[in-house]
Structures are given as C-alpha cells and as structure tokens.
Length: 467
Image 1 (cartoon, helix red, strand yellow):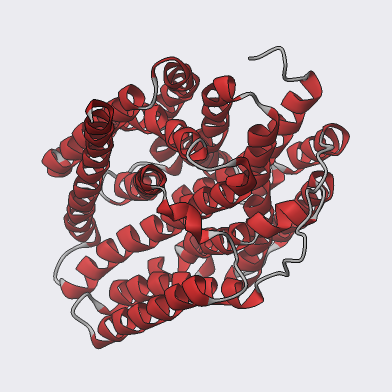
Image 2 (image 1 turned 180 degrees about the vertical axis):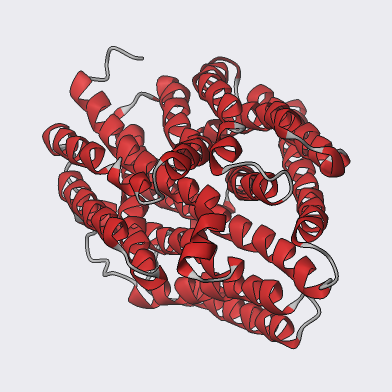
C-alpha cells in the first residue's frame, strides 16, 4: 500500500469495510438456513427468501440516497449511526420469535449496510492516490465479495452445531469493536450540498420501481411464469419504470447525477459490475439450496463446499487490482468474463451429475473470475468521471451492486419455485434440478454478455487510438 496514505486512513477504510462485511456475511449466512427456517417458522420458500431479497432491496434504496447523504453529513456521524442500527438489528434477530420480527431486524441491518459500503468507497476515492486506486479497491472488493462466499460456511457451521440465532450472536462483539475503531479513525468532513435539497420523490420512485420488479418475479415463483399475476406485474413494472425515467431526466431535484451515464465506458463497467454481483449472490443462494435439497447435504456441508473458492478469490482480488494499476482494465476483466463463462457453462453441463467436489471445483473458477473483475470494474468506472461526480458514481455502483443481489436471489428463486408450481408431479429434488438448470442457463447468457462488453470496449478503444 502507498506510504502517502496514513495508517489512520487505512483503519478508517477498514472500519467501513468490516461493517459492510458483517452485513453481507449475515445476509448470505441466512441462505443455508432457509430449509431450517421454513420448518421452524412455518413459511414457504417464496416467503423465506425475502430475508435476502427484502434485505438487499432496502440496502439498494438506502444506497440510492448516499450521493446526497455523503455530502450532507460528516463521515463519522454516518458511520456511528450505521453501527448502532446494525447492533440493534442484530439483537432483534437474536430474540425474534417469528418471521415478522426477524424480517424487521434484517431490514434495520440493511440500513446499516446501505450506508457502510458507499462510505468505505468514498473514503478510498477521496483519500487514495489514483495510481494506487486499483490496489485499494481490490482490497475493498475482497472485503465485500469474500463475505458472500464465507457466509454459507459461517451460517452452515453454526446452524448445524448450534442454532441459526448464533449467526447474529457471533457478530455482536465484532460490531462493537468495529464501531469503536471507526469512530476513532474516521474524520472526513462533509463537502456540503450547496442549495440542493433531498429528493424524496426520487427515492420513493426508485423504491417503487425496484420493488415492483422483484415482486413481479416473486409472483412468478408463487403462481407460475404463465400466470396472470406475473403478467400484470410485468405491465406495472414497465409503466413505473417509464414514469421514473421521465422524472429522473426532467425533474428539478436529482437523487444522483444521472448525467454520468453519458460516459460510455462507465455504462459498460456498471453493467459488468452489476452482472458479476448478480451471478455471485445468485449462486450463493442456488448452490447451497441444491446441495441440501438434491444432495441431502447438511447446512454445514452446503456452506463448506463454497469455502475454497472464496479463499482463493480473496487472494486474487488484490492481485487483479495491481494488474489493473500496471496494465489497465482489459486483462483482469477479460480473465473475469472468460472464467465466469466457463464456470457457469460447466454448472449447466453437469447439473444432473453435480456432487460436493464438483461444485467446489467449479465454484473456484467462478470466484477467481468474479474477484478478477469486480474491483476492476468499479476502479475503471471511477476514473471516467470528474472529482465532483465521484459520490454520484460511488452511489450508483453501490446501489446497483446490492440490487443485483436482490434481483439475482429473487429471480433465481422464482425460477426454481415456478418450476415446482408448473410441474406439481415432480418431487422437490427433481423440481430443484430442473429449476437450477434453467438458472444456470440464465447465468451463462449473462456471463457471455459481460465478456462481450469487455471485448467491445477494448475494440472501441483500439479503433479510437488508430483514428
């Protein structure tokens, strides 16, 4: 790391990252508890998946406000609020007697994560020299992306040996320590919002759009993909999306400065960033569910099979950041797209023959590919915009990262549930296999699109350089 960056700044970045890590760790830990929670709380898969989908949806909405919040309030105040609300949410989850209380606790934690993740990146973009940006965002992406893979292991071990409530108990002392560290080390002042006022209409509109899309896919999971509720949901989602887009373009108040999307490279990097997280969070939901439903693995085994990939991915993240700093974005992004495509294709080819070890090995490819491109995407996106728009770019990427997880979980869960609804003669295991295969098909298409976007940008750059 660069000597120009003080130890206090490094600890400030670490504090924001660890608070974000805790939120994502708990979120993905819950995925392996779903079969247990369905039995204990007497709810369906379509309902229980809202512990992840609803959490990520609120994280997304909170992140949409951070372009304004990070300018309006000092970083220390934001961090202190996020730490306290995370602690309260954790305690509420520990004592929750039913699904409703557990959901409320998770939503409080969502507010915390929605503030902590953009805050961490804002500290990086404001304090780290451009020539070392790739390294720091590489480490930041490891903090964020390691959690979704460690989560199933953490949750599976605790659920098998003790109780799902231990997932929350284990993080309480860490939240307290991280909170104290952050309050001491974070001292970045707010830059101010001048005469701009908060765009309440924009937040509500964005929330309605995102919720409508997720709820539409939930309808497909409950009633089938050929059902009337799903068709109505599609129509409503299209209408509210058009209305919000019109407001975002013509409205006087701006939730964030959408004009940054005029930069073509930024748009492609945002697409890659969104897609990688969609695949990442989606697989962290699909694979443990497959292992427990089809392979009859325990929650512990379902979590442990993702551990090797997560550890190797953690090593790759900073390396990819250094490669980006020295050679530019093409190599790490190309490696990322290629490995993600190969990994999802292998999952599709061997869907009917997957076992513990084959899932573990293929998932290693996925994690190495993911960590090669995730940090690089946001790093290269950040250099496309002027300094005054850094918080807008940060908020946009962070927001879409979380919504990718929410949509990924909701859509892939809806596919599996929808297959079961439309094929009632199939056993739970057979329906899961069929639905999972469709999920893998969707992820292949997305992976190829990511790789194609990387190649397209590189070709355009080469053509411009020759012109």
